[in-house]
Each structure stands twice: as C-alpha cells, then as structure tokens.
Length: 177
Image (cartoon, helix red, strand yellow):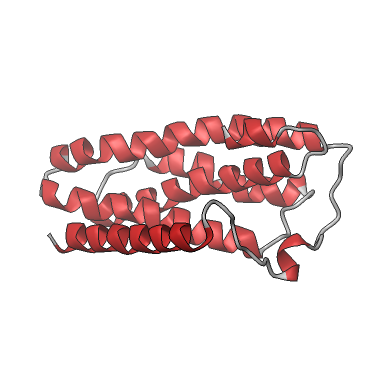
C-alpha cells in the first residue's frame, strides 16, 4: 500500500505544479537551460551517424524484447522455481532501477559517443543477460538478470536517442515516435 500511496502523492504533487505553472504562464514554457546542455561537448561524426542510428535502433528493438521478456516472464519463473510469488515485484523493480541508473550514467559518460568499440563493450550486456537466463535460478540470479535486463534496454535506448537527435536531417520526430 505504501508504494501506491507514494505514487498517488507524487502524481498529485506533479499535477499541482503543472496546473500552477499553466495558470501562471499559460502554454509558454519557461526554461533556461544550463550552458552545458546546449554546448557541443563532443565531436559528432556526421559521416557515420546514419549507420550508428540504424545500428542502435535495431539493437534497441532486440534489447526491448529481452527487457519485455524479463518483465513478463519473471513472475512465472519465480513461481515455477518455488519462490514466493510476492517477491516478483521486488525483483522486477531491479530492472527499473537499473534503467534509471544507466540513463544517469550514460548521460554523464560520453566515451561511447562516436566510438563503436566502446559502444560494443557496453552492448555486451545483451548476450551476457541472454546467457544468464539459462542458468539455474535463485534469488540472486533473478535480481542480477533483472538488473542487467534494465541495462540491456537503457544502453541502446540512450544510443538510439542520441544519434537520432543529433542527426542533421529532420528525423527527430521519428526518434520521438
């Protein structure tokens, strides 16, 4: 109940602040970004950006399958493994925590930008997670696979968003879609 109450209060507060801003400013968005957000921190390789964009969107598709499989299959696997079904929510939360942490880290680390070798190292989490799904399950393995599954989704998602939004064409709408 505590989790649902927290979510309800968070939604109420968010709605309150949005409504308050809407009454004060209307549809106008008042946002002053920090200089670091719009300054170019890394060199963008526009020659290979279409290739990177296609590669990471394709990888995102397959990693999304792994992430979805983990979220949808874990309750059944936990039940079949003899563990109480009530822990499935806590195990699945590891995936969402991992997505959040990965988004924060990938936003700060720019070593993967225009560096396919480093990006490939990050993407090795995909086959690792896939292989671990075939091991004998215990609570630690459920939590580890769930955490890695979140990374499987968040890493290529970050790559795809970055290369989709830094393209010189009007492709941002497709990326958002």
